[in-house]
Amino acid sequence: MEQKPKLTFGDINLKNLEQFKVITQKTLPVTYSENFYYKILQYTDFSTIGYYNDIAVGAITARIEDKDGKKTAYIMTFGVLDAYRRFGFGTQLLNELTNRIRSHQEIRTIYLHMWVSNEIGFQFYCRHGFEKTTYKKNYYTDIDPPHCYILTKRLYPDVDPPIPYTEEDTEKEQDIAKQ
Image (cartoon, helix red, strand yellow):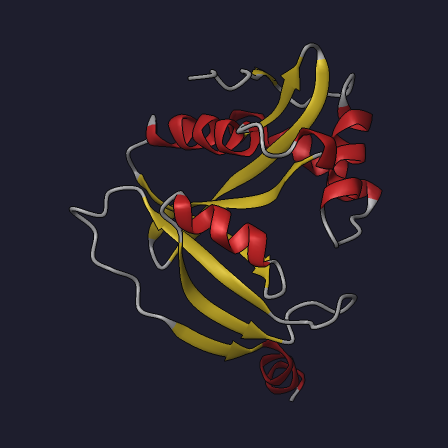
């Protein structure tokens, strides 16, 4: 049986920030501001670039948040360049992040927003223990359709109860906030 190629991991820093930008711009349907990229430098504990033969081929970034009184990790960006997909690099990046997060036992879940039209992404996350926990209508402003799912992975499913599925309308929430 042929063994999958292995990634090495490096922190995201000023020296490779441009590589991270390229990966993000080529793999995600969202455009981020320059300020966003510099903010990523604050999250080095839970962010990494994956290298294959010294070439930056993918990256994953996360931050820790308080959600409903519990610590959770939020995946901000995650992508592997097209030419390097189907080699297991996405799985290696996600496993690296998950291992880093598990070293902080107070963090109970990992979650992310995923565009509803990303069927391949949804299949990938399901294989890695994520489940749909929220459907958000009108979440995005610059892609069509503008809806997303929140996918969540319980790190300790034998201990923590299932998360109920909900639906929200971001547009209605914004209208209410304006009143």
